[in-house]
Amino acid sequence: MVWGGFSLHQRTPLYQVVGNLTGQRYRDEILAPIVLPTLQQIGPNAVFQDDNATPHRARLVNDYIQQTGVVRMDFPACSPDMNPIEHVWDELDRQVRANHQPPRNLQQLLQML
Image (cartoon, rainbow, N blue to C red; front, side):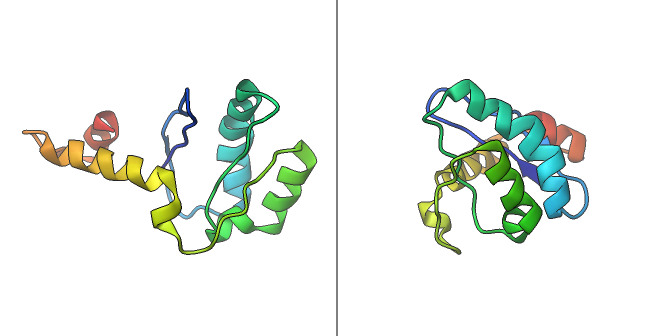
């Protein structure tokens, strides 16, 4: 699994999630080192959108988001059609599948993404 984010003028690096993503790992490996600095670069009007995946809604994640002052957009559960990142993942999938040489291993797939 990979995690990535984007805004109107920038995107985060893709992050490979190895194993199960817990709330603590989400906070420590994604929110603190990737999301928070990106939101700070965007500026004071930045709004964070994630889905309602279990790790995203863990109490320690909610506490961290409150403590850091991140503004989080309320987002209905099970609404992938409303989540713009799903369109990005779809386009990445199409581009990888259109490549004449499909990836032979995980490392090649990550490089293609």
